[in-house]
Image (cartoon, rainbow, N blue to C red; front, side):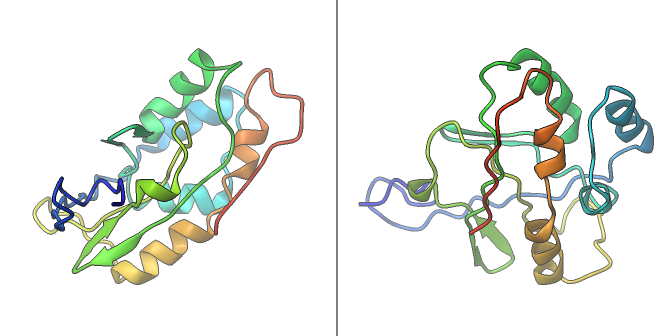
Length: 155
């Protein structure tokens, strides 16, 4: 049996929708840049749409930009580099299959929510493709204390 977070103990599908949060305030993006981090333009374009990459999911932790700098500072020596995005849709909901993700990996993704008043200005498939095509590598590359080569993966 899969250890996917969307399956209950009997293996039945459980709907657990994710919601899109408001866009990131430009001041918070500027704070990252002032702290010496590189935020790629395509990453900034996603953040201009939503700060919806902040949720907890079982043994995985998914952080929004609000916590990225704190995460980088606190975990300076132990942060696991890379971007991992595995998912599939059930209706308008994007699910992450944790059976394909090692504990400690960091996942950046977004799910569709209709009840919080956020309009994407594009359909969800387009947004998901945009998010997956975002190059997060320059951000991870500029984490303080990191000198060795870093990994980057989008399957």
